[in-house]
Amino acid sequence: MVFAGWRWNGKLVEYLPEGIHEDIHLEAVYGKRPLISFETFEGARIADRQTNDAGKLDAFRPPMRLGYDFTGWYFDESLMHPVSENQIFKQDTVLYAGWKKSVYSITYNLNGGYFADHPIEEFCYDTPTCFLDKPVKPGFIFKGWKDRRGRILRSLMKGSMGERVLSAVWEKDYPEVHIMGETPQPLEPLIIEPQETQEEILSSSIETTEFNVQDLDPIKTEMNSLPAKPLQNPGIPKEANSSEQETKIDVSPANAPEQIQAQTGIEQKPVHEPKERVVLSRKARRMAAPDRFASKNS
Image (cartoon, rainbow, N blue to C red):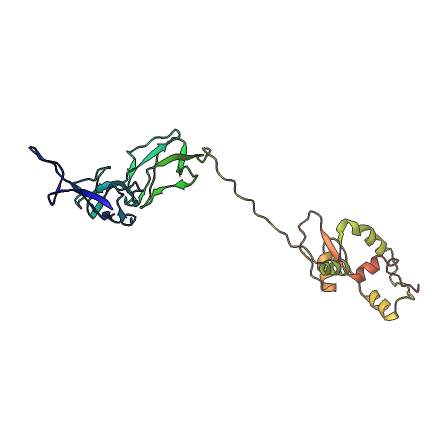
């Protein structure tokens, strides 16, 4: 129960009038503890409470609301009549919470830079998302803002709360260096000469042999000293000897390539060297060096 007042002559009185010259009798009036309800306006809900025996509210934690600061309790919704700390309640009452937007500050550590324009220094919970201002530092590139937790920030998101202490992060700017008059050197072309295969080398060594014209002089002298009718070689058939006797090859330096091509049917490659070259067939080489091509039975 809670004390509601004194009753005198059937009425609740708060004071005694003047001019009383007789004994009086006051009767204490008690009632149930008043029930106090709370309207928090989108803040955290608070359950109804009863006052103590003295009709006062015991201390309790105020409500919370994102982005707002609690300013106290009021008797009316317009927040014109605040509730005092030692308020005594004698009946059920509804109290209304007062709020104001929280304003958070931003502290910048520029680390040698400066702002070209005035940056944002305060924000609220419902401030729209915006980019943080970029400072300037000669010779450096701005990489972002680092907060106390080590995160790199470039914008302020809507719904952010709490004070901000931001430090500028810089990176050294290394410009590209170009030498005046320097021109890039062109790449030299890579020339790959074709190489002969093993089959071409083998066939070339067997079919043709190149000789210097000057090297044919001793061979020509030796051939002129041979008898008109060659001796019968037991290692060579008679028909071959007769054909060799009838075939005469002029290996003079003037017409050696034309005669050899006409006799052998082998086309001679043009010679671009200072010295002339001729190509002898196998038969001519055999006549020039009979000992080298002698039969095994001889």
